[in-house]
Image (cartoon, rainbow over all chains, first blue to last red; front, top):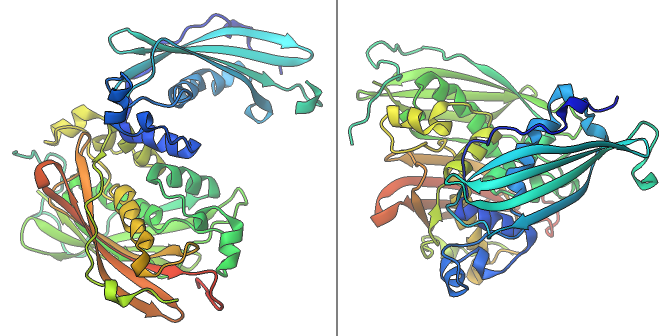
Length: 154
Length: 146
Length: 156
């Protein structure tokens, strides 16, 4: 089933504020085996010029993936989640995410294209503080495989 | 700090023997993964088939605390304010094996007010069954009412 | 090798402070499928008289379990690396609910070491304090310490 083209260009309202927890940053770093003290200890973070403990570089995904669920899990999009591959993920940071940041995510549907029989969905998620400061833009590319195609066919 | 006890049942109006609304929960392997992450409990016994087999279990088992949290929600739903639950605990007499079959297992919870203590406290007893066996006994859940 | 009964009564150093966050409370509430507004909505929690959202009553397991696990790192206690904790009993006694922005520490005491069949059973008493040493909660836990490297170890 092709994706619903009317989603192209949609911009969603900013998500409810998410307060970045110090312990969540530590948990995320643990899950990655990331031992960098700037992600664990505020004194180490300050010694490197940060005002607070800073999150590992992919931490934004914790917010952006959930926010992109507004699109991905919308039944009117026509996306079969069982056939979706997360093909590409980019992050462009203005500054690191820090403990105690209060952040919102604004999701846009940048593209819905058909490539070689597969649907390609491009989403961008702009992460800002509640005061409006840009922190990060994450761009995700999801491929919904046409029936009969396997991941290695792409 | 003065606490407004809006929503808690009234101590005077609750009778010994009152049965709270019971619930049946379905627990699947994916719920153990989610709870493990949320609780930061990565004990392999809750997801790894080899660990389970090495200690003689048919499959990984639910966290006892997941079962307890689900059971307790029957009481916190009744109390309204979860802060009303001031003392609780229980034993896990049997493990809850959760096969990765997309169906999971059912856990059924019943709770009864068994004793009125010094106002405003009551003692609730919670009983949790799964697969025909008692998997959690919580005879002493102390709830501060209004 | 059995756990060292000489460690009964041993009190371990207070853990590093743990900051309770709204989002972690929400994550935990989601995992236990509890929509009680006191966990989700700061205004609802304040209407009940709390300064912010409160944590579900089993929430402190996050820090008490981690603190209790550290005990097996004590070389004198005699636990092997493969030891598995299987939960036998757990209790919490509260002076007040935990809420977002609490900063908590845990001090663990080995309350008892016993045996059931071939396996050791360890009981802990963990004192959870907030800022300024406020005693918020006491956790009492018992675990069967399964050691898969022993013969005849069985969880049933």
